[in-house]
Amino acid sequence: MTIVCRCEHCDALLSTSTNDRHRVQCSHCGRMTVIPEALASLPHPILPDGGRADRIDLRQCLDGDDAAARPADGRVTKALAGSVPWVLSIFVHVAVGLVLAMVALLVMPTANGQSVPLPNIKMAAEILPIIPSKDEPIPPVGPLGEPGTGGEPKRPLKPRKSPSVGEPGDARPLIGLGLPIGNEARFGPKGPSIGPGGDGLFHRSPSGGTMKDVVFVIDRSGSMASTFDVVVDEMVMSIARMDWQRGQCFHIVLFSENEAVELAPARLVPATRANKLMAADFLSDITTTGQTDPLPAISRAFEVLAAGKGRQGKLIFLLTDGVFPDNAKVLAAIDRLNAGKGVCINTILFGRRPGQAEAVLKRIATGSGGSFKHVSPDEYH
Image 1 (tube, rainbow, N blue to C red):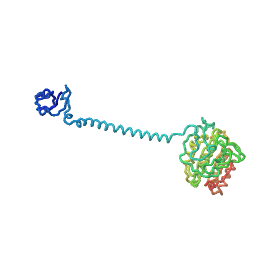
Image 2: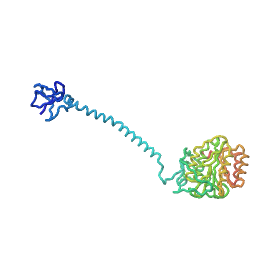
Image 3: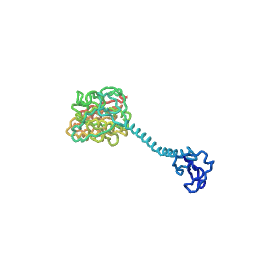
Image 4: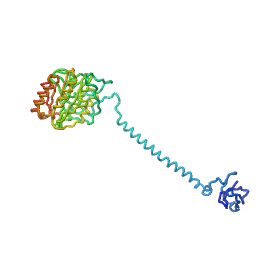
């Protein structure tokens, strides 16, 4: 067995055997050190046989377990400090991933095969679904080209009671069109319309035939501010009833005192689901403004219809709430543009001021083989 003590010359830690307790040569300085008897008899660290005192950490011998634990504690603290950024990074990435997953669920499109009704318009599934076939081709429409595409309407249309729609949510025939989409729009005893049945805002005419190309020419002047939403509702529903499979196409031209505002791409488009939704989106952004000048819009309507050469069944819906600034000029322009009587014009007076406006709109309708209708806004409130 060995004992441990200090060199009295260099203060190094020395070891000696139990057989030689009084003198030991220091392995560090080479000098002899006397170990007092009293020191040799004191309690001391015991090393295994062959152990070397110069390899022992002096702090462990003097301070015991506390000194030995300090280096280990430092290593643990350093390891923990180094791991904190990684732990925080993991938590941040997990949180961001959860947020992105929730956003993806919110914007995920509906599953294939579901019905896609016109947004924000209450309608019975058996009356006004806009359900495309599996492959919805573009019908032959002469020089019209490819149809446009559109998204969901940006502004919800306000549900309200009306003679043709009834209470919001009622499963009643709308806009005078009483059969599901996919049925041909034919003329009945009362004349042409864009779909069969009923007597809505966009109504029948007294002549015969099938309406293939329809242009809505609608007043958006400032005086229409309180009724324009009703007109938009009715127009969107009428368009929803059109049937692209029968070659039906439509266009929208809005007028006030400035240049006419048209549905892009400023031509007739087939009545496909995408184009119907595009029309609803376009109308949701329209605001009423200015005075009434229908001439630019009427001229554009005839230009658009003229592009469908050789196609029969052309119809214009002309809607306003009052008199035009120059009635004689409007009548003369229509007589010139429709000299061949190839376009039927249905006129609608949607307001409380019949008088002179009624006479002018009746003249336009009867002169083109169309029909006139006066509707009071009170019927829609």
